[in-house]
Image 1 (cartoon, rainbow, N blue to C red):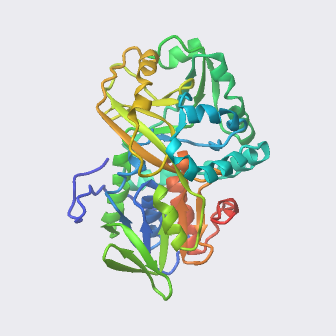
Image 2 (spheres, rainbow, N blue to C red):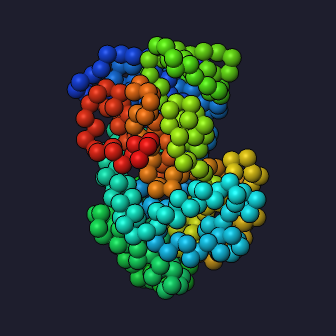
Image 3 (spheres, rainbow, N blue to C red):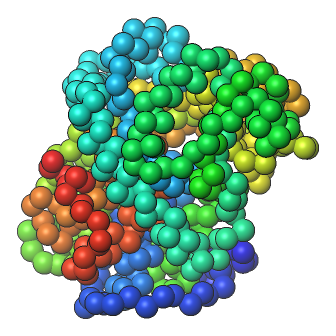
Length: 437
């Protein structure tokens, strides 16, 4: 349970202290700067702090106000599905024409996006899909214990719903199109159940009786407020003595030691640097010795009024690719992938066209928009995040590029980065996640 704001100078609620588990091979304390205060960066800061390091967490805004704020709130356990899947190239005309219900791109951004798209399509060969899925699966198996660890430490248990995720399909064609996804789950051990129409209605009575098939993922969890969870993590970090700074990182001085991180007009000295700035990591990574093909998948959400009664777990309309998640302040309709630049203006009309389908899915839904949001998923063509040291500087670490799994993999990434900094065996082969692979 998150408490009231404390006297930490950052106007963040300080939760009740939790007893932290012991960890072997504690390193010599160092001064470490973590860049980025989303779920990945805050998790890195917490685990590094647990090892006794003096950690400064820097972000251009408040913790959790970026992509972590607006996601669908689903914690995916055991998932192994990359963005690039077999046959994606056949859908390119639909992407460019805007008739694909869950994936579109801006024509004006096509020249800049073309090199990244070519790399993405090269990852849709069956051999590459299997390799990328296998890499993701090695991380996904450790999602649940890492999340449990930080939730218990920070007192954020009340935000977690353990009721799985239900995907429903109106057409046989939409369900049949999940064959490749189901094959990856079958191969890598992810649990799911195939439901018929009666089973869907028994599980979620408010869903319209128009869906003949469903996929239920019982091990998935969800959050009723992703922002408040990240705030709870950040408050725990500050409450244990961590430093939180607001400002934009503009560059580095890496010639001597300690290293220097430039934040606006100030210099912050550090023995080590962790880059976890999500979609804004590419330029900074280049300065830190890693030129990675990172781009962004833009995602949208609308907040809609709550239903009483309403869905009790996250739902996904498989024909149109949007999710509806019950949250503290209403129902969140999260949708799609748009390829464009970080600076391109939002196109809410693209998502607004889905509201009639949401109403058909949930007849009791009120489609009045309470708020609208656009965020940026940091994605590499092979769908694997970058987790590990810089190719040039052994005391600089990268933790970005988690695409749709950022919320899920945030705590685990924090644990892995702390192991690397400490020189501990992380228990996972991180070779597939090197910056230069």
